[in-house]
Amino acid sequence: MKKKRSVQVIKKTSAILLSLTLLLSACGGNGSTTTSAPETTAAETTTAAETTAAEAAGQEGAYKPGTYTASAQGNNGPVEVSVTFSEDAITEITIGKHGETTGISDAPFEKIPAAIIQNQSLGVDTISGATNTSNAILEAVADCVTQAGGDAEALRAAAVETEEAANAVLKDAEVDVLVIGGGGAGLSAALSASQGGASVILVEKLSALGGNTFRCGGAFNTYDPERQKNIPMTDSLASAVDKVLAHEDVSEAHAQLKAEVQKQWDEYKVSGDTMLFDTPEWHALQSIDAGDYEGNVELVRSFTSNTLDTLNWLEENGVEWTDQVSTVVGAMWNRSHQTPNNSGADIIAALEKNATAGGVEIYLDSKAEELIVEDGRVSGAVITNADGEKVTVAAKKGVIMATGGFSANVDMRVKYNQQWEDIGESLTTNNSPGATGDGIVMGEAVGVNLVGMGWIQLMPLNGVSGGGISGYVNSSLFCNKEGERFVAEDQRRDVLAEDMGVPADALEKTVAEFNELVKAGQPDEFGRTTWENTIESGPFYAPSFSPAVHHTMGGLEINGNAEVINTDGEVIPGFYAAGEVTGGIHGTNRVGGNAVPDALCFGKVAGTNAASNE
Ligand code: ADP
Image (cartoon, rainbow, N blue to C red):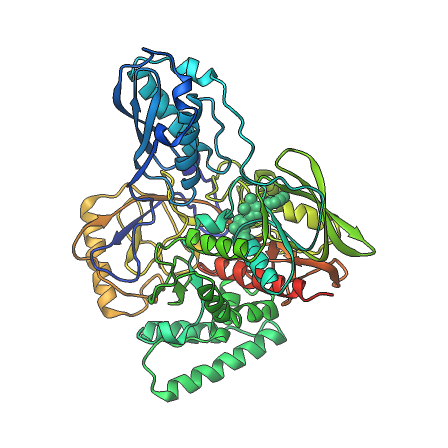
């Protein structure tokens, strides 16, 4: 069954099946690179010279010496390896061309070849969270073994020395702050808590840090007068502001926010400023509007008023941001900041480095199972450590839940979904395998109020053959199988996507019409308002995309201090949460580029507040 193409029917919009994006890199523009993983060449070589056990393992005459090349299917396409053999051993493994996602594939590319050579065995463990990449390396090396006249089956059965894990194994412990989950929210919380003077333990259930934050494009929405100062305001952008301001009041908090934005907008218009209008309040109002007024206005305001400070704090802690801002898919405004590699991996690397340097103890392969509550206060958690033993971590100042969402948990998707006709196995997810909703289950067990659980976001730009989970729309158009545009590419993610097959003449006509629209810069028939580059000269990229479960908007209710709220509307002492495990920010539809700042802002807030407890 072709799962990726077999989405059924969607209640809210017409049938979403498949879309095509043309992205023009030659025109420059704001980071409008292809969103499918490009073929890359990783010059990563592991040689026997680096190991100690290699020479001992082989049998003389087992191989025809030389270098052999093979490839096997990884996560995003073939992974090529070249393997060099002496008469009796595998001496060198080089990873060649591949389309695997940078960051996620780092651990298998480094560890699997080293383990094969060290043990002269193909029975080495795969890396959790990167199983397909690991298996691709093992299969391709097995192919090379066969080409070299060796016995791949025997090598699969060959013993593997189980080295003492390089990572420490968590034992019963007492600490100020326990952080559960090592994605963006968890690492941000751990770093800020340690900067606040707390002793911190962070547990991550997978073998690698990063979660979805690592996999994503790292787009970070914030108003930013400095970086936005050269972006022109257009009539079509102005019409988008007017449209959102024209929405009827839905609550007092909304009316108040709207009045503030209206005032800012009026002042902007009389000022004669011709550059992009943006403020934290406009970001908040736009996010509330895009989430169909289901988000918590106070919480969203506290979020958008924190984004620039958090961006700057991240910069102080080694995260680089480019000078350019852009519009990631579904962001609807030119405020998406990017790292130099357009990658959340850049953010994770900097946070990990600083957290570790600041004394945060990080334990991988360590899964939180349940929270401990004493006298109504969350005071720790039971963890299954890397040896499979249950241990207890007592946390004097607080526990921060940062376990991410539940896109990778089909049962939970089906249980909570209120939005789509079919959100079960027919849909894949582009999330980390760790996104199984553990924090929601643990939270519920201690009486947390869950909010927005039925809202689940599909990412229209999921590469059919794998690929990234982000994309920028500034210089791209989406078309269907008839080669025609069908949607405003800059709009909410839940309005995108359709079938495709693409006759060339229709596509050519569509591109010509698109270029006229770019030049006109007016809202078009679909309501697209952001226009930047025409598509004139190649190279063009036309990957196929299908929707995938991308983000779960609901979760634990929190307030602006990242304190968790129970079903009676009260703060649960000692309990904080941040990131995708929480609900209340995104309403029915998360704005593209809001997830990373959500996780990092509230992670920082949670860490600071937990550390300040007595
Ligand atoms: P966020 O963006 O909210 O930080 P991520 O998906 O980036 O979310 O990170 C969440 C992390 O939490 C993932 O690395 C995931 O593996 C980890 N995680 C999920 N459940 C548990 C658990 N029970 N114990 C420890 N870590 C967990």
